[in-house]
Amino acid sequence: MSAPIRVVLVDDQALVRAGFRLVLELEEDIEVIGEAADGGQALRLLAERPADVVLMDIQMPGVNGIEATREVTRRQLGRVLMLTTFDIDDYVYEALRIGASGFLLKDAPADELVRAVRVVAAGDALLAPSNTRRLIAEVTSRRERRTTSRELASLTPREREVFE
Image 1 (cartoon, helix red, strand yellow):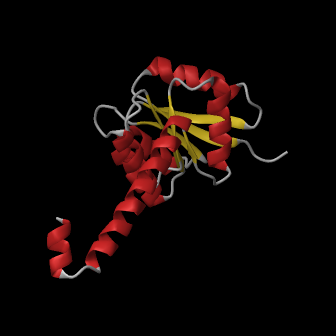
Image 2 (cartoon, one colour):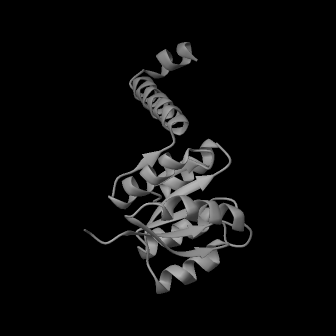
């Protein structure tokens, strides 16, 4: 049997951390090695005990999840799976831009959380289904806008004037 997936829980709510711990520790291949109530605590903990997966809340007092994730990924202290109550696209885009490996809503079923930890630990990426659908739409829309911009650049000044 291989070594268990080492997980650090980062959330400002102790009850939420306790719930995640209960769910994850039921799995033989997952071990929760630490908890932190904010990003600053998480960075100190991870400097001593790097994790395979860091479950990171976004909105926390002090060092928030986005700032902490930026440092965790920069220092290569673990792969980050962002967790939030808020299904807000800006959070998803920023988290992915700074190197998070996944994004999951806190209302996901327990088995989805366990699967997400395994997926991220394996080096793959994961998005909540609602985020995936919107991200695909955004990428498609951007591609269409770029095509339109290129086409406009090929027009003569008079053709652009008429178009506008």
